[in-house]
Structure formats: C-alpha cells, structure tokens
Amino acid sequence: MKSYSLFTILLLCLAILIVDILAYYWLQSITQLITSETLITIINVFFWVFTVGLITLIILLKVTLDDINPRRKHLLISSLYGLAISSFIPKFIFVIIFSILFFSNYVFSEQESLIVVPLFGLLSGFLPFFVILFGFFRTLYRFKVHHITVKHPKLPASFNGLKIIQISDIHLGSFNYKYHILDKAIKIINNSSPDFIFFTGDLVNNYAWELIGWEKVFKNLIAKKGKYAILGNHDYGDYSSWNSDEEKKENFEKIKQFYKNIDFKLLLNESEIIKKNEDSIAIIGVENWGKPPFKQYGNLQKALKSVTEIPFKLLLSHDPSHWSEEVIKNTDISFTFSGHTHGMQAGFQYKKMKWSPIKYKYKHWAGLYNEKEQYLYVNRGLGWLGFPGRLGMRPEITVFELLKK
Image 1 (cartoon, one colour):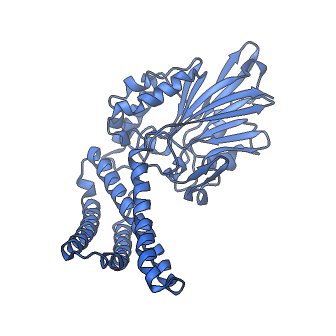
Image 2 (spheres, rainbow, N blue to C red):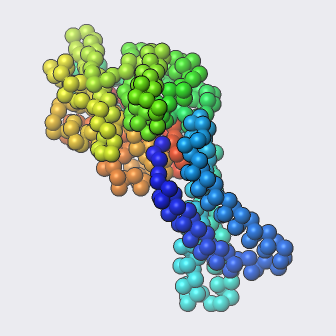
Image 3 (cartoon, rainbow, N blue to C red):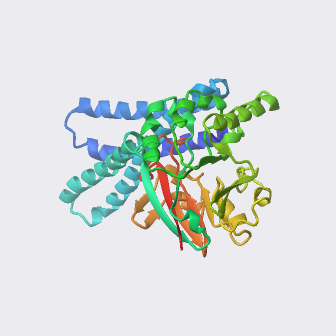
C-alpha cells in the first residue's frame, strides 16, 4: 500500500477538521429542535470525541507506522481508512446539502424551512453513511459473475466455444486469513467448467507471508485445459521497506513458488502454444507494465518472440494502460485480459451505463473495449485494497465464451 508523507496526512486531517466544523455548525440547526438539553450535550460531545479521536489516531498511526508489525499494519490502516471514509463523505455531503438548503430559505417560507431543512439535512448525512456501511458488510464479498461472449474471425474452428474464466486483484493480505470467504467464488468458477482460468495479477498486497494457508483453497480450482497467471504491481514487494535486496528477492521467489504449488503456470514475459486438432492458439503473459510511477517489468516483444506465426493470441497484462500503449496498432494480439483498477471499488453501473472516478485516471477501467478486431477486458477485481468496501462495484468473476465469427 502506498505510503504518504506526514505533510499529506496533516492536510487530510485539516480537511476532516474543516468539514467537521462546518457539519457541527449546521448540526445545530437540527439539535435546536430537540427539547432535552442532556441529549443535545450527549450529541455534541460524541461528535467532537469522534472527530478528535479519529484525527489523533490517523496522526499516531503515521508517526508509529514504521514500528508496527507488517502483519498488523494493513489491518490497522484499512480499518482507519474505512472509519475515515464512512465519517468524512456523509459529513461532506451533509455540509453541501445543508448549505444549498440554507440559501433555499428564500424559496421556502419560514415554517416550511423548519421542516424541510432538518429533514433533508438528516437524509443527506445518514443516507450516504448507510450506503457506505452496505458496501462494507454486504457487497465486499458479494461476488458478481459477468458473462461475456465475443465472436472473432481469427479464432480457429477447433476452439469455437472456448470458455475462459478470469479473476484478478485478489490481494490476499486483505482477507486476514479468512479462508472460507473464497469458498463461494471457487464453487462458482468450478461449476462453470472453464477450459482455462486466467489470473491477471496482484495476488498479495506486499508480502509472501500473506499466502500462508491459501494453497489448499486455490488447489480446489479446476480448469479442463490449464490455469495461467501473471504478476501485478503489488506482487514485486516494491511498496515495502526491506532490510536488504536479498530479503526482497526471497519474498518475490516465494510468491512465484506459490503459483507452482497451486498448479498455475506463471507467465513471465513468455508464451505458451495450445494445440487442438490441427489448430493452435497462443497464451501470452507479461510482467507488470504500467505508466510511471508504476514500474515497467513487462517485455511484450520478448513474450511474443516464439508465437509470431500463431494467428489468434490471448494476452494477460495486469495494467490496462498497456493495451493502448503497446498492444493495439503495434501487434496482432486478438484479446487482452487486464485488471489493476478495481473499478476504484466505487462507482455506478446500470446495464450499459457505468461511471467511476477512476475513469479520469484510466481510459479503460472496467468491462469490455475493442478497437476493430482487438479486444480488451478489464476485470474489477475479486479482492480489495485500502478502502474495506465496494460501493456499486462488486467483486468480479468473468466468464468468457469465444466463438468463431
């Protein structure tokens, strides 16, 4: 998980404080309707105890971060992050709505304002709060299956009806060794009877010890023809401090060994040819390739070297930025499978409409895209990182059916 400077953390705390001061100011418009002075005092004291406590915890965690055991660090950061989000966003919306309603006093009569302003003010605060809680406790592990059918002229006849399941961005450290959570996902995948299972990176948050006990879970995954994986930006240990280069390398080797233990072929800038009857397709996997500040370990030309003559190519590349930068127009790769964005774990989706703030950073951030006969699919991720919730962006299992056009 990315580390932020103390100055950035202090700016965050200042933003929380400013919003809370404004929220408290508007809160008085509601509490003045309460007749019990004791209840008003309790509400005001609780409000400021929570605010001061949250800001203090954020600063203390930042100051003592380096001394905290890494196994506890992620849990503490995620819990505090979730607490801050669930507090800040509802109050921010509450302040905005109440400010608008204040100026609406010119529209409403004084008597109407006594009813309308408190009612809408309360709804503007409580509704986002309950939506966020729903994201924490209801949708975080509510796996959604996306069925995608693509017809392609280059698909060999022998592979017509090829079924592929893609999962991505599991971030096992976030599960805190709650192995049973993935039981439902494993069952969904196996019941779909895929020919191939593709995993497109970010197995862990940072450390190999996050994988302890997970072998028995992932060994249950069944694919008729094979299971393939690539690495994501979090799998290299680049976001952690290491005592030595050897320690970092040992961590990396253990992560790669895990894939062997669970019978996944880890593709490290390499390809594999799959034959059926007289036909062949290529499965290509590159190491992480992203725009700076993300490092570019991927070497697409190296991975393509042995499969240039294969007409139908499937590419696993963690970061969807890679597709527009190196894949389309520069190669004849038919289909690219990516992840990385998580759909920001927050957004809006209805039928063909979708929106998330992540779209302002990534042009291709969730779902299916194509440029003529070259396709990209960006998986929304099966796990989570940082914010311990998913708002309108459920964890995803993607089932592809490839047909001959």
